[in-house]
Image (spheres, rainbow, N blue to C red):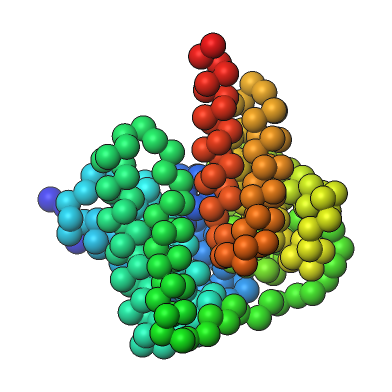
Length: 287
């Protein structure tokens, strides 16, 4: 007989793994540290991420999506990012809460659609990007100002910039959040932690070398996509550094292009850079 507490444990584990999958890991402990990392900087964004992930899990269960994918956090991580992003751009209110839940549900449905229609494809954070762009478009059409949350620290040493680069994966500009995220990665994969640091650091150096905004660099704006690219490509191509290093630099260039057109990049440079590198690498290896 199934214990009545089992569904609750399953829900909590699914939620935490959803957070951990933001950085391509499947670990409830890593996810817990990610939640804490967000919370030390912003309780509002932490709450947004939790509500969004729960909305995603409920949606996936009601739609009878694959139980293993739900348990492993595959449907939750895009929603977690959506929830954090909504409360990053908007204060907590009935409207922002409605937008958060609707966008989280949309990200879950989009994730399922992409998994079914393009099996084996690297979806990454595409549902999050589409859902959050839609939210930003709607509030812009309504004349509502999207005001990002104030930053917790303005320390400018490169160490702080590097750790913020990891923290900004989840919209956290506080260096301590980045440190906690790195610790969370170490518990599941020290290689992923190392590559997150390398990605953020090389992203920062690349941005400085090409003369991108120093203010954005200091706050980790060129590090978070680079960190995600580094983790994704290092796992896919463990025997060579070239794809990861090239992908990191490409993500920085793409981030600069989004900036030039004054578009919210979110994690689009990560997705585009990773897709491009995978495409080029696979094509080269097939010849």
